[in-house]
Amino acid sequence: MDKLVSEVRRIFSANNLRKHEFNPAEDRLSANMLSSLLTAIGLLMVFVVTPRFFINPTPDLALRVALTFGGGVLTLIASYASQRGYHYTIANAAILTVPIFIVISSVTRNTLDALLPLYYLSPILIFVSLFLTERMMWISFIVNTLTLILSIALIPSIPVIKFMEGPFSFHLIVSTLTMLMVRHRTALEALRKRELQDSEARFRSVIDGSQDAFYLFAAVRNAAAQITDFKLIDSNQKAAAQLNHYPANGTALPEHVRAYANANDPMMGQRLFSTYKSVLETGQTQTAEVELAVEKGGQRWFFRQVLRVGDGVAVLMRDITPDKLSEQQTRELNLQQEKVSILHSFIQDASHDLRTPLAVMRTSSYLLNALADRLRKLLAEDEIAARRADLNTVTEKMQYNTEQVVQSSDRLHRLIEDMLEMASLDYRAEFALAPRSLNSVIRTLVDKMQSQAERKKLILSYTLCDLPLHINIDETAFSHALEHLLSNAIQFTPAGGQISLRIFQQGDQAIIEIKDTGIGIAPEEMPHIFERFYRADRARQQSTGGTGLGLPIAQKIIEAHGGKLTVESQVGQGTAFRVWIAPYNAVLSTPPVAAPTSIQSH
Image (cartoon, rainbow, N blue to C red; front, side, top):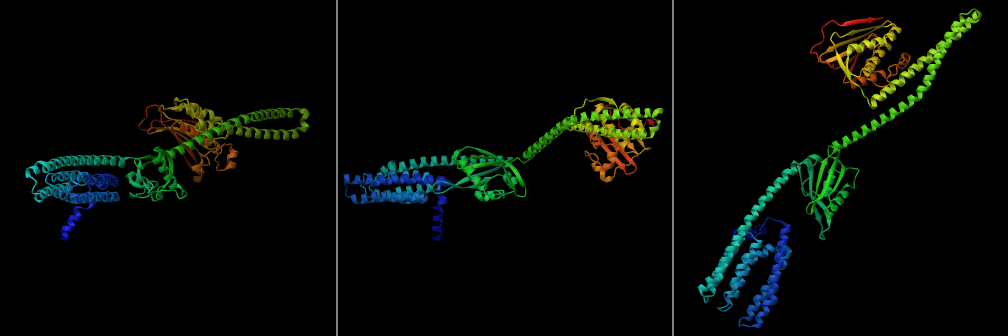
């Protein structure tokens, strides 16, 4: 008995009675429809059918009124129960109770009217098909069939042929049609379910394969249908990977926000709630760029798009941190270029203002030197021989001071020219490139610098490549870079030292080597020698007349030609600068082996 009761409870449980999988919205719709149907039937039975019996009374009036009125009241009670969520139980009860009322109604009637109530058994099956499963429909069909057979046994006065032609045939026809329709409906629902599953699978594949993080939030409403919160109902793999956070479905918005909210932004959750609520109520998509604190990932920028989906919102987030960094770098580069432009303008204006007094200084120093020479000539005359010693002293002082003025003005002039050149290279370096013979460039350079080397009593020599090397250069600018390197060697090589220039080829590179026997460069100074205005020994640099810009200018010009400048040095043994640049003509696979041409000058 216990097993039988358990099986009956299982069969008639809500989960087995449902026509579909559990769906709150569909359950509410079914409950409302059943409640409306039962209310209409109950009111009809109480206020229409029951009074009709008093119009044409019969001997069994009391029984008919009791059955009809009682059935109407029970129907209204069932309607109320359906509204309270018991519609599956009500549908189940109808399978068992309605046939009993129909049998009683048939038994109490006379022979002519006894068949009429039996026709009402068939609508029960239609009623069951609206709410319950196909399994319960078969149970209802069996119960109805047994009820009809029982009616024949209880009312023997009914002719069997009338019964078979009437209620029983009607029952079979209606049941067959209902079963066919339900079977067709079940097949359509199965097809729809498969299509929905396939659609969901495609949607999931697209969402999980998206480069954007995807979150789907459902609105949480109170009894007054007001939005009180949003809960997460779905997300993709990118969402977890992007924020390094794995939210669970059903997570409330405040808890979800805490996973990545900025510690210094406690109002972020409230702003998100307001945004989601506004999108859901207005239907207008909102976009924004937001900065979030990603767990174990630092601060990152995201492009967020919020759009309405049903009774909720979908949130798409794309990581735009690289774009933001690129924008920042672009702004910094533009700012740097603006600074360079301002500096370039300043140097041009300042240099223009300084050139005029420099010209005056140089002219005055020239005139002073001329006066000193004239005084020397006058000292040779007899009439002023008595005061020759005093005049000699005066002229020597004049000559010394004028030489200081000349040296200072020349150094200031070189500094201004170097600053202008560096500013021009920084701002916009434009070169007129053309193939030039490297040997010819070196010959011209040595001829130009020969007198400067001789004044310091240095031995300047050069070795040309026996093979015709050509390089694609702006000859004026490239020669100027080499001039800076050679001037540097002359400045820091003591009298009696040697400076050599050599051209050779190594692999696919032409190399220009400028080597001296000067004071050398200390190891700690090597990383800084190409910095602007860098001086290892300021006193020594000032005494040699350097500007601190020669090496940076040379490096800038050489690199602008696609070359490279390297240096090797030892303190007290000299320095070697090498310029590496690709030849314009066909590249030789091995260095030249022919004897180079060597020239020395003293």
